[in-house]
Amino acid sequence: MEPALLTSDHPLSDAQGGDAPGRMIDTLIFKVASRCNMNCRYCYMYNLADTTWKLQPRFMSDEVFSTAIGRWRDHVRGRGAKHLHLVLHGGEPLLAGPDRLDRWMTLARRELDDLEVPLSIGIQTNGLLIGDESCEVFDRHGAAIGVSIDGVPGKGDLLRIDHAGRPTGSRVEARLRWLVSSRWRHTLGGILSVVNVECDPIETMEYVMSFGSSTCDFRLPLCNHDSPPSRPGWDTDGTSYGRWLARVFDHAIENDVPCRVRILDAVINAGVNRHAYQSLIGNSELSRACVIETDGSYEFTDNLKSAREGITKTGLSVARHTLDDYCRHAGAWSEQYGLGGMDSPARRCRDCPVWNQCGGFYYANRFRSANAFANESVFCSDLRYLFDHVRARIQGR
Ligand code: SF4
Image 1 (cartoon, protein in one colour):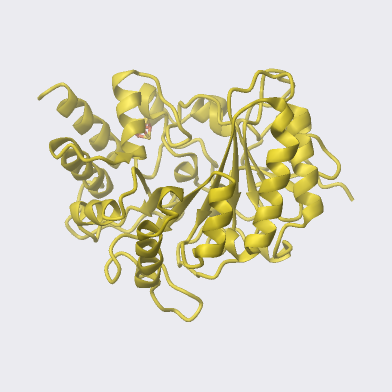
Image 2 (cartoon, protein in one colour):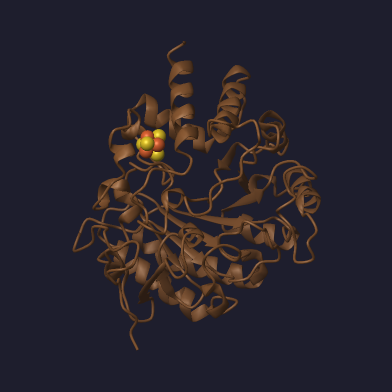
């Protein structure tokens, strides 16, 4: 039976949908593996609100991958795309093995070649399985590896554990040190770390930079109003995450560090140019990504799984639907619209002096089961602190 597309009690049912010929998916995120060799306590895929992964095939099939690429080619053709981004994601994508990844990247480059649009390929991994064989494949296809870590081993990785409950930081560090000392060093595209306010921000930043990556991405935890972030005892005004990022910002500009911090780039860009970008920022430009699950389902951004069971489901799949069908889906553009796309934007945001820059920030952090995403961010006080701090530093106050 065909699943319902978007019922009125779905948290994204307020979003603006409908026909929009200009809308285009330029980023396709392939969930090539639906299991992981880690078991991070905070993992939005496997350990938060959504359990639908249990019904997913462990790996994407060649047929699903090939069909999805064909759908993408048909969708993009003639739409004036400037760049396409293909992301191999999971679970842990390296569990799919280098042969499969090689096959899929070969197919993607071949099938999309006649569009004459540059195609970048990225793979987001926990790093444990990085090795010669996989790096040779990534190098051959010009793919960039993004590695997720949790700061300094023994300090930041206590929740980033394997299935036996052991912290994984030291093992990931060993693979990263190997990678950056090998002939595959250039395949490292960036490092992502979740902000842990119990760890020193400068030490964390220096640790990330010790791998020589030119970009790093500090993410706020995927908490929401139902599951608020834990805060240290000294944090009486709810600004510890904002202060943590502000210290990274100060350290970066005072020391002219040769590493771009994406979340701060986004804040600076939003604050200085009054022009937000990236899905981190609520008032961002088009969020043009679509997720393909291992069974071929089209899904919304995976981090929404932190909010509610089944929230990313669309009822659409590559076998029966086009990407144009996905673009007509009411929920597909909800993140793009930020709070402006909801019927009842949070009053606190509408009245907020940094609304034009912040836009409620990261979508997943706004969730509350009573009224879905029509809320300010659960990190609101942190964001006010961070935006004010960055603006004051840039204005020289
Ligand atoms: S700082 Fe808070 S109130 Fe202001 S726009 Fe951001 S989330 Fe909304």
